[in-house]
Length: 108
Image 1 (cartoon, rainbow, N blue to C red):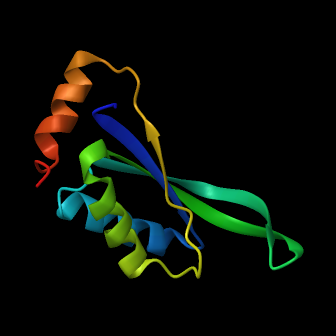
Image 2: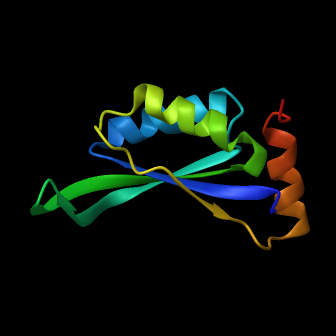
């Protein structure tokens, strides 16, 4: 298993993205959350193809913190079904990963 992950979620507004980013960093669940957007998402929802403007949050954290990250996002996310996916960080600069590890809380 990999020690670090990047967690992605999308929301409809920049304000919602900022709120999620602030929450994760404040709780030390993420060392950094980048907000990217606006982006355009196309997806199938309830039998129809939809198009929506969204903002993408990319949170850098420890894999062991994923359950807490998911719970924190779900607690404030406005969507009925939120995209919350984690991708393992398979490699990174030693200095960046050391900083990341120092800035997030230790897993319980």
